[in-house]
Image 1 (cartoon, rainbow, N blue to C red):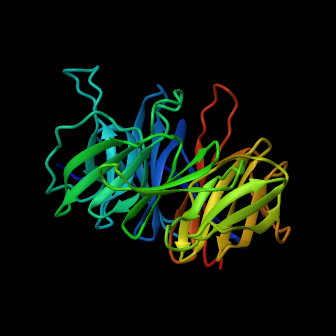
Image 2: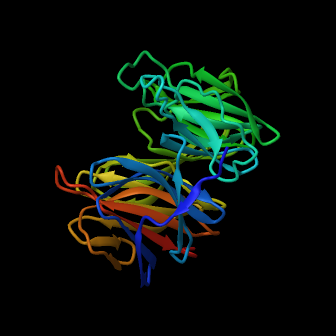
Image 3: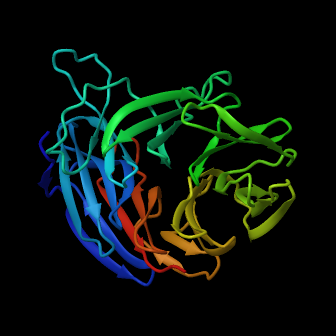
Length: 370
């Protein structure tokens, strides 16, 4: 395969603030974000950049912590999904267009960079999933979306098996019910956590999705948002919101449970994204509410910062009342990515009126937050 070609599709500008460098990427007709991942202590983004006729190119853009960028065009397909292989090399799943069979629906998995020693794969049926992490010699993706309409259809896991830096085989497995699991990988174990009518079901599975062990955590009707850590042998820490408070539930191996209070926050979470670990026991995650969105950082089960954008152009740190001023009121957080130790990047785009195209991306690089 040929390597991707470098291009310069963006008008680039920077703004230094006390919160970090804000990089502004502008285009003439339209840009939409598709995926992102940490790459070599930088942020790697996959975007669609549109022309005046509404056609688009898939563009990969590397953003470093100073806001410098490099961009490359992808010629092999669309709908990019990034993942890391067991050697920390960035791969991407894309769906090619076959002019001889335009209705064919398939995907290929290829390295993002240095493709000269890679043959074009045959392709497989697309897997709609989010990269979770690496388990043994597998990259693991989780699909809790494609069957979300049917409570009787389970989540799926895809285990992409590698041998000597190359993909050997892809294994698609169904997780036994219940569905809507959170997935956590640690110490060569794949953990699942799901709601049931009587508590939280904690399970460990292997690459065949066979259940190795399980327990029911007796928390009654309490719900959870995300896993910080999950273990059968050590304390587990789970992010929750209850009665106007954001808390972490600490759960011992013997199911002793206590709440760790983080902050009083009365706006109800609509979503909380998967935690991004920026150093040991330090996590950043973004959230949405009915009235806004934001992100927060937790270190050793204590809140370090809590940014919320509601009725202002920017985001206020509710712990200090400091305001990160930005030029737009209706920003949407696309993703957050670890960069260097204790540092991260937040990717934003603008909410537009119906029929209008978003024409810029903003990337805030926060460094040494704790």
